[in-house]
Length: 215
Image 1 (cartoon, rainbow, N blue to C red):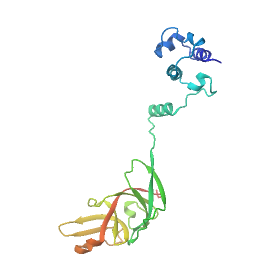
Image 2 (cartoon, rainbow, N blue to C red; image 1 turned 90 degrees about the horizontal axis):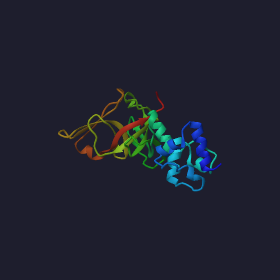
Image 3 (cartoon, rainbow, N blue to C red; image 1 turned 135 degrees about the vertical axis):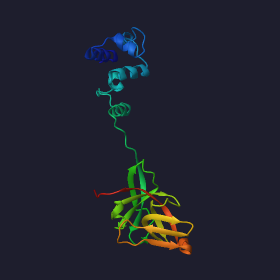
Image 4 (spheres, helix red, strand yellow; image 1 turned 60 degrees about the horizontal axis):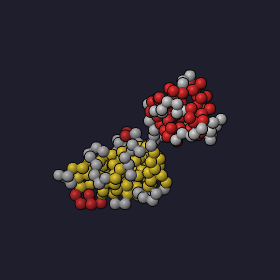
């Protein structure tokens, strides 16, 4: 079947005239009839294919797949339905961080965690312990961390104490040179660091999201 024959078939199926197709695709009067002896440009074929919502390969006779299922048409269809694409990123999992007493922070990359690109994080850690359960962070959860040297009071931060790491709410009082790391579980006392003790403590980053199997 030739290109012209396929266009005539589509016109018959959709009950439209060749002139209507020419007009809608910006073609001159009688253009389609001339395809019996000459081939149209690829841009013209693309316009006609889009008009009938069929694949250009089928229209050209190089494929039996009639449906137009290109990436572009799928995205357009999803947009009309209000379906947004989900973009993903891979973040390195650097080890465990304590939700309880500080533990050694393993910074060797064990693996990668896939997350949406809307999560503005640099890496992630696996929570260990139960000190943050009232913040809905449980043992085994994945915590996404954005690197920064300080966090706002009340934010949950990943904190390095000497060579150990813990996840706590951070409260810093510069006038008193005091740092308080507060658990989200009443059975744990706050960790308080004053004066020169602060030299052994630094903020690794802010917890911006977590991934949990616990509902």
